[in-house]
Length: 182
Image (cartoon, rainbow, N blue to C red; front, side):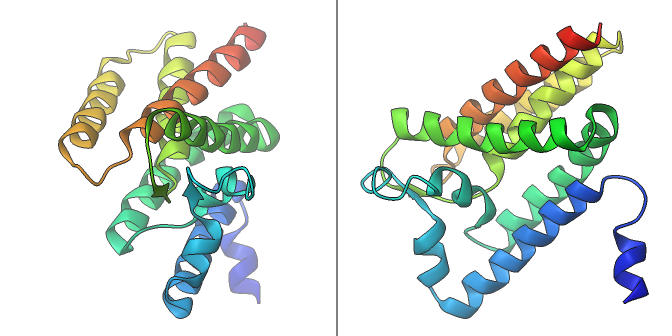
């Protein structure tokens, strides 16, 4: 039991918990066939009957590589932002970025979607805004965001609208937070 306490001690506890939830959900997806995925996925056809899927879809994934890339990104940006913003603001930022990605998906796409990418793009946008607000060079972050957007546009299975919605939401929330910190 002390191993779990050590893993959750120190920095970025919420980030680690979010990664753990995503991994557990993915394992449940694998164990249930399509059952858990269908329960959590955001669908443009049924969202009015299942509004919780605007958030739960951000915890399910369409494959191991999808999960691995999103969790690695969540770890990188989540750890830094959680330490800077604090746990509550970070968690709101992440969840509202997922929600922003879901809203954009509903407005501009059709079908169903899963993945933490809206939240992760929100964290990337927030990281860029925080860097700018602190006076750090941010051109490298802009290049990283640009590359990820380009990859999203060139891969037909990517829900680019969810990525851009999460990016916009996370950037706006971070701008609001940074404005208050000045």
